[in-house]
Length: 248
Image (cartoon, rainbow, N blue to C red):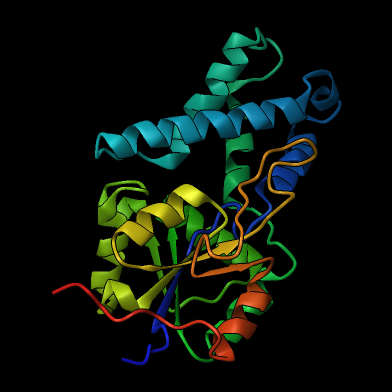
């Protein structure tokens, strides 16, 4: 049976479409001023991101949800306490720094690539971030969606199956007709187990110099690319198609 084109694409946002580390570094220097250098702000940002991922993984495994804004706020407050910086970084600073996660800047290829993809596919966000944060970031970045989905709507974080299947149900598209797009292997591996197609986008600078971004080789996923524009070219050329559905 010939394979059909994918009907819809679901996109991870943080990391896949947005350069969160550089954005937060610049935002922190604006909020903290001269304090940023003395505080070793880049290492704090890296520790902050790790704390977020750990918290979300634990909540996903327990099928629980809480506001990502609160996760970021509590995570940074804990880092400040452990580093003994309470006299330098105030509660108001923490609130202002946390707001930076809702003003992320895009990777250069992201907005143009999404525009190309929307010419032939339903294009939707599927993010662990709060819905308000996805909307705010999308406005900042110039992302135009057919739909925006957040873990908040499903009360569960990726990689819990309810996020992927919930988005598919709301779109009215069989999972086999959906391509999950992300720069993180855990996200794609979970989607693949549920019958979704998978597209890996390599973001070598996601974690900055000396970082350890996920990598993939041809064949690891249905498509492996280095930009959203490259993905658009492959899909619009018919080089990637969905497998026949195996779900009832």
